Length: 104
Image 1 (cartoon, helix red, strand yellow):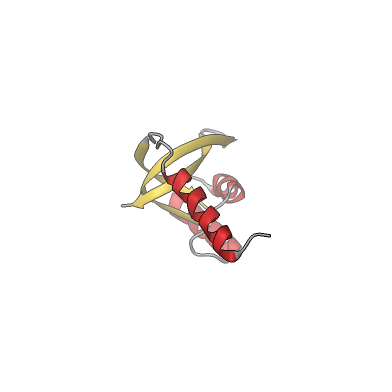
Image 2 (image 1 turned 90 degrees about the vertical axis):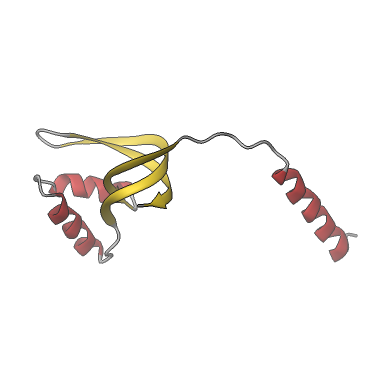
């Protein structure tokens, strides 16, 4: 039968093993663009985009009743996989998952 003290000791031992694992390098990029909470929000932005990014962002945020569903700005991020491509009659948007590490 495990006691609470034994469980805590095992938990601390497990955490110390995790912190000793080597770190992997991450490529941090800085870029400006449109950043949305979900793929659905980005696809809606593309559908509404007619050259006026601010109007399309405001429309998505209004539809979602969430002022931060989509924003425009500059961020520091780690690029993840490309999850979709969305097109208008004259533009192609690559929808990429990112992990935000900073906001400028």
